[in-house]
Image 1 (spheres, protein in one colour):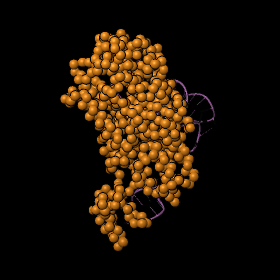
Image 2 (tube, chains in turn yellow, red):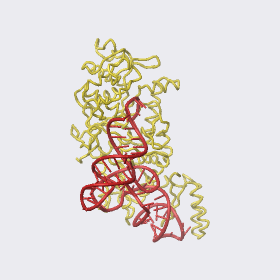
Image 3 (cartoon, helix red, strand yellow):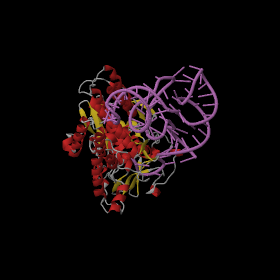
Length: 475
RNA sequence: GGCGACGUGGCGGAGUGGCUACGCAGCGGCCUGCAAAGCCGUCUACACCGGUUCGAUUCCGGUCGUCGCCUCCA
């Protein structure tokens, strides 16, 4: 099987992907906290890892991708209180939005999307194990992880415990034995409308007296859910680069100390989407929701989905990516270019054979740290060469590449159905223009073309008569 | 302050010690009644200063600048 290399945050190097069990690749990605609709920055890891999965599956790997949904969190409690909703209702509502928004990308769903609220057994057991092995302690109802009990703490984010800022956490700082410790479990508070009783998930008498009803900390849920679904030592753990510290560092440490083994073999981190040079974040207030971006990405449906995927894949996943409406429209234009090329190809194997090297370059680029912009360059090189051929080129290569990118359903650029049915007015104008042209009344023909353009149609005169093509979204 | 990343042509964005990235936009040409699309060509690109080298945007050192993490964060 083709050799894949991916950048691993822990080692800081490109490392070969070596599945433990034959061709099975297990991937866990940190998904969203559902307290509001996701923005285009949140959508980046979803797209990157869904497409990475497609690529690996295309090569013949058996891929299992898990993207969790955090539905218990301070932000959810806060947002729910603000809206006068129960945190359970808000989380359920926002989870539905997340599913709907990402469904619209047409990439399908991950193989599993575990919820923290439904993983309590695994979480509580995990915490219990950490307490038993001396890496966690309960205090005043909370349970904390003892950071200094892990001599390797810091290997992922490349920081040493000594040089870490001794910043105090907001909650429970006075109960921690060490300022670096973080909460595995937080005792319930007045303002929180949900809580779980740890002893319900443990054998009789196994729950320490000091461990109160409450909820899990953020980091432990991922260690627990990832392990329960994928086991320990799985191939790839992914997420945004802003999660490297402390979230992933903590996850890694929890699993290392509890199991004596690393959680994942390769840690992949995607760069941030930036708006006006700054990381897109709710706290900065510069967000564009995935829904909004889909709406401005042109014709609803597959076309808008492809535009958003194209926009996100135009940059290498590890680099920051500039966001603006103009960038999205720019991506849309490039989608149009491919759809236009699709008009000229024929079904079947691609030839001439010399075009095969573009297909090869496409897969080579993806195999070397999932270089999607380089792969897209190869795809466009294929398109250019196909366009320059006198005879229609077989579409197999292009369709294969598009399929890997999650754009298998891309349609040739043309009116979806008969113009008569879609836009009778345009159809009538076109007929009039054809007549004017036959009469060589070009002034009238051009005026009619202007009207068609105003209606959103491009007119293309060809040997078989004029054709109406939908125009790209105006910048 | 600590750790890390990065500064590429109008914009976005790859990459390489010497060979056209690519996309969008612009300009010229071919094609077209004219266009559109396509094709061909094109536009002072590699922050700055040193160094290594036959040769550096690509390696090394420094300067300036930007961004991320260090606190919730995809």
